[in-house]
Amino acid sequence: MKPLQVYVDESELARLDAWSRRRGMTKSQAVRAALRAITRTENEDSLLRLSGSIQGLPADMSADFDQYLQETFVARPPHVRHPAKTRIRR
Image 1: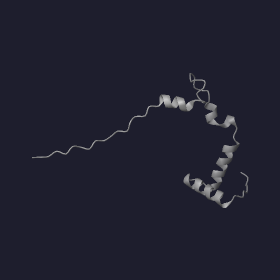
Image 2: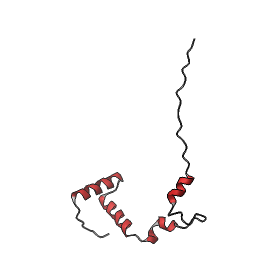
Image 3: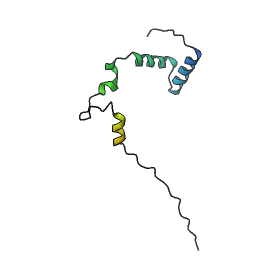
Image 4: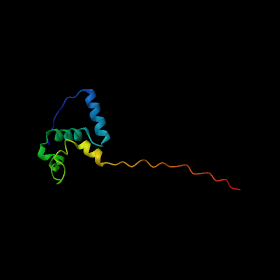
């Protein structure tokens, strides 16, 4: 690896420090990950490589994804717990 010196303002440095700390990374590791993310080509993007790999989906799936999700996703209502009835002992 070769060294790279970068100047950032205090707020950028604070955000980088917080971001990397939350993920258990050093600031150098975080900067390298960001560089890889912004410089990769479409061929290197694993999600883009998956595009079109599932047969039988509608042609407008990506354009109308929210509509298809709304039509197919069925949320179960939350389970309502009823309080137990109190029994009176005699």
